[in-house]
Amino acid sequence: MKNNKYLLSAITLMFFSFFLSAQTSVIDSFKQVLDTIAEEQKARIYNRMFDNEQHYTKEDTSLIFAKKALEYSKKNNNDKQKAISLKNIGYFYLTKSRFDSAFLYFNKAIPLLESNKDNKNLIDAYFDLARIYMNQGKLNKASEEIFKALKISEKNNLPKEAKEANQGLGIVYYNLGEYDNALKYLQKALDYEQNKKIKDNGAISRLYQNFGLINYGKKDYEKALEYYFKALKLQQNENSIRDQMIITNSIALCYNEMKNHDKALEYFKKALVLANKTGNPHLIVSAQLNIGETLMNKGKYKKAIIELNKGLDIAKKYNFTKWIRNGYNYLYNCYNYLDDAANALINYQKYRKYDDSLKIEETKQKIAEIESKYESEKKDKQIQLLAKNNEIKSVKLKRRSTLMYAVIAFALLGLIFSLIFFWLLRQRQKARELIKQQESELKFTENLRNYYKLANMLPLVVFFIDKNKRINYINEFGLKLFNINEENMQKGLDIYDTILPINKDDFQKDISKAFENKNTSEKEYKFNIEGKKYFFIGFLSPNVENNSVTGILGVMLDITRIRKMQKEIELTAINTEHKERKRFSADLHDGLGPLLS
Image 1 (tube, rainbow, N blue to C red):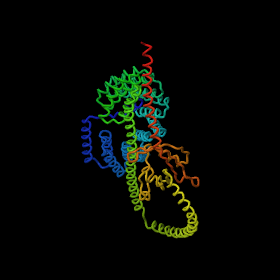
Image 2 (tube, one colour; image 1 turned 135 degrees about the vertical axis):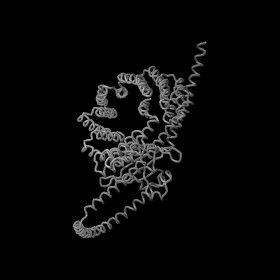
Image 3 (cartoon, rainbow, N blue to C red; image 1 turned 120 degrees about the vertical axis):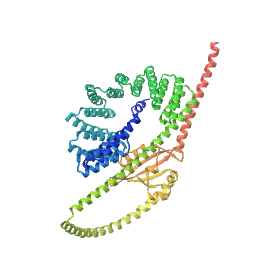
Image 4 (cartoon, helix red, strand yellow; image 1 turned 120 degrees about the horizontal axis):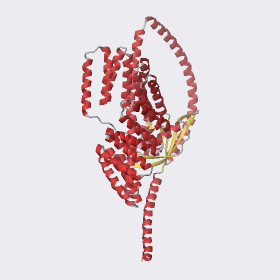
């Protein structure tokens, strides 16, 4: 249930179609203006077109407008519009989660924004850098960028931007677990909203929700409820059904933590009514399963099963995999409490099936994101490199002169003679080193041949990874298990593309630790090979030469049969316990019958 609050805080706002048509007409108007204005004004118009396209339609054409603005601003030496266009390109890449490209453009824009004293756009750039760091989990770095924005806001008397900075710091400190600091900065943001002549009840309500969330994190549930009820009252005045549902759900979560399941159930039911009014299936499933879990916590298992099945029906209809997994987990617990071993086992197996599939899907998604990010950044770097080369060539052409030719020719001639001399010396030294190296390699080759023979005799996976995380060697047992042929081995295989456990994150962390020459203990890894699950105990050991890690030696022991035996023993134990309970009940009934008669 604790995961529900994270879902509810991430609902995407929807826009009506007339906004889009209105924005289309605005873009058309801008295009008409471009045909009539002077060329030095076009950068400003293209930047305005970017704002409208990016903030309302989210179309990729916004990047074209930003690059056009950059082109005209460079052409007309307009540093102000150049800085804005660089910031806009960075913002576009930020929305696409291409953080390296976004970071590059923001850092190009910031010095120009500072020199132009464009404080509002400079603050926006710092906020966007903070968003990048937060997405990367670098919370301390994010706070540094927001503090820069706060300092500029206070120095230049920009209260709205100062409020946003304080609110951002509150969120960062909440994620850092520093709840007192989070409350301090959120209070500053709230003071700004409350001191405005025209109050924004929606903004105040959202701040109250943040106060509630932080106090929830502090386990001060009474204080959290106080803020949630304030937020709910404001949203009822605003008549926002979606926000009312989210707050009502948060109130129920507090009551659940306080073990007041009756109150929790009351507010979860109210949340379900509100969710049905929104028609949002995510909210409906969330509320329905929350009701089922709360009934389970109250010990009303049969009623809980009815509510959980209602939620599962909707979750299956929309293929909400995570909710389906959670629903089967709750059903398993209910049937287990009812001593219905058969249904408990059925629902547990379904829970495990969805749990495993989710983990596999998450792994695939991460791999796809990494590949996409790599290709995009590779293209960007190639474009940047070409542009830089063109600039260098144009500068050289402008500065070229007869005197420079003579100086360069003389310098090159001296350099060539020097290089030839040093090359001859180096070749002589290499010849001596080569003789020594060949002698040592003969001894090493014999030892290596014996090692390979031993490794191929073992019923283990033995492999060696070089500094580039590519497999230099894997024994015959590993080749057969992971279906690797010799031709691919010679080309070079990436460790993560070849030996890919389901728990890939643990595998990557352990490899990183080994490359840092840190101690790594044995760890269990799970594999899905040709549709079958395998379990291995893995050992990773750094290969250190001259105080430097040159690679990692890995050994994996197959424990799949042991795990299967453990599972069979667990199932046997459950069935035996169930039979014993039935036998004990029968014996008790037979013993008490004569006494009662």
